[in-house]
Image 1 (cartoon, one colour):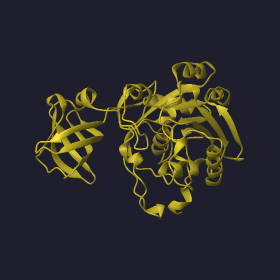
Image 2 (cartoon, rainbow, N blue to C red):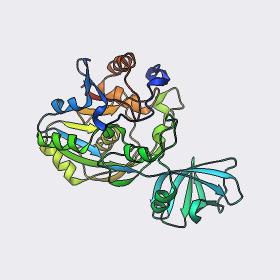
Image 3 (spheres, rainbow, N blue to C red):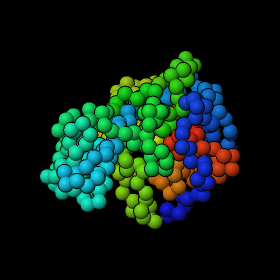
Length: 336
């Protein structure tokens, strides 16, 4: 398969720059991967599509204020995007500066906060902060909105670029399928007999990195940390269909079942899902619309069928759906 197999034309005005007025006010495109049938719905209609006994699996990661602006101790301006918190004082980060900082140099932030450059690991720098990393980010960081959103993160984004069930800090991008759910909708689904379970996958900045090879079999997937609680494994064992809310929840579940049955625990995953992948756990997927030529578009093509996804995206463009992180949603039925 070639990268060009996962391309499509998107009018720029369909890229959502702000979320819908209410979380549940988005549209929902329902695609049956077995028949290719499409249905235009409002997001609250998901209630009639989720049956008693279905298990909705949500990613409870919490987006951190991962973007910091500062200066090198030599005076040049620096922008830091934390990719991963390693421990209380250490983080891996992308660093943008006119000249790459060398090991041993310091980066100075507002309020006297500082970080020392320890070394470089590929595209990331290992930084040692003088204070607790999360405390520095909370005090001086910005919401790390995706590059296709034109405005800088503000107070509205601090609330809306976060799921209502976020509780485990560590993500630098939101699990955006979950942004459509509010507490009332989750309570209603539970009241109708659906089970609600959680996983944690800390979404990294690598989710926005382009695929740079035409032969997608040569692409190296970025690594992300995930954890599956035993309670989630038990809920899935008792339940009926597994409905992953977001590609991150799906990747966590499928990674944890890669060697057979679903197992609780924590690990790193580089799972790269492309057409031909055999799904072991997830039967339905709630997801947003993804960028052209992206690994996430490849994932949904594997899940619902590449031809079905091409038709669905063409339909969404024609019907003026809103795309990407703050956009509308899809509910996909697995093709096989």
